[in-house]
Length: 458
Image 1: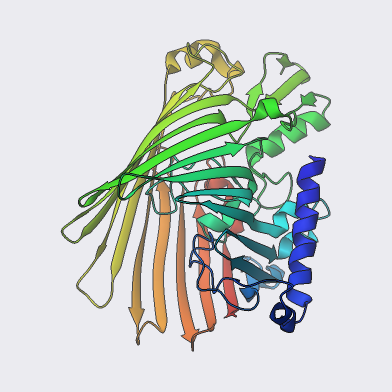
Image 2 (image 1 turned 135 degrees about the vertical axis):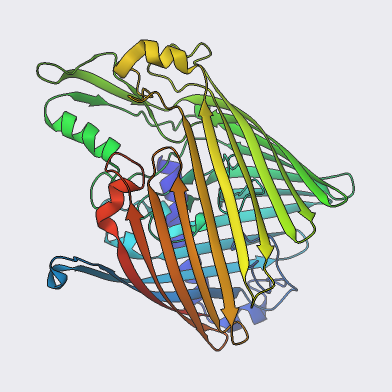
């Protein structure tokens, strides 16, 4: 990954130099004509404005205060605070454009900091007639879901702090090349090439470390050999994705194909001896996968409808390999609607997954890493939010949450955002986790927190 790290370092340094240099530099031609006038609202840098004499700089400075209440001993409640500086820089002319977003936050306190954690995105675009080519550290969101997806397959996810941030902030920018070409009148063809695997970022310790991972580390400390997962940094680890979207009247449709990897490792326990004393070897590896999916969105009266579905085909075509993920079918359905009371908006989605060939998992028993003692091989998450605004949208109140149907664990997130003018906002919110300790959300039952964020956009 030396080239990857070099690109990260160069991106950070060049961006800081561009910001520090005086604006007058652009007047004498060193930067040329044609720096863009701004960034898209979703920070994906999809468009720039008219040419200007210097680089367009924007971003935000946030200060986050978080407390983890101790109900039994309030004085022992843990408190944490940190600043978050986001810096965006971009430019465009007739031949191309560039865009960079850096984020300096509490990740800087991590001794094992990867410079890529500072780079939210860094790309160069080339315009060749109707065709656009983009290269760099990119985040691409595929699918019609609202912060939940089954066909958004290119980027990995950062689970370092699942209690904060939105979907896009949790996605990791990765080395990627993308070609875009128009299709029919309103359609778009996207072809993405990813040369190496960047997997999900999972914390190994701390309050957000998942139990499955810490259990493996405990076994390793007891003498079990924990092997892998191997670094997938050679070109034979390349991935490719293709997306075709088009509009047919009120209906938006898309097709997706991806040949790549599952972003979380499978666990090979075939050489593990659990009794009487844990010994042997546990091997982690990333499974190759073919994903074929579809996405759709439409308006039906007051409802905005959205949906996605995908088939995940792994190498375990018979379902009998205990060390390889079984194939699965995943799907999403949702809607949002404006309610004619105040300015209420209701958003609801269902995210589902069905593991296939599960009878073979039962035959394999606990040696299969996907084995479930209760024989449940489906997962359904119901997520939603109710939002209202007041006083000309100066105040925004929101109640969000998610519930896993099969396991009963859930999370609730109330929040109130207050705007002070156009650039200053304060957000007061909280997050409550509930569920059994062996469930995904329930394992964070002791991580409930209250939070106050003050943000200035520039």
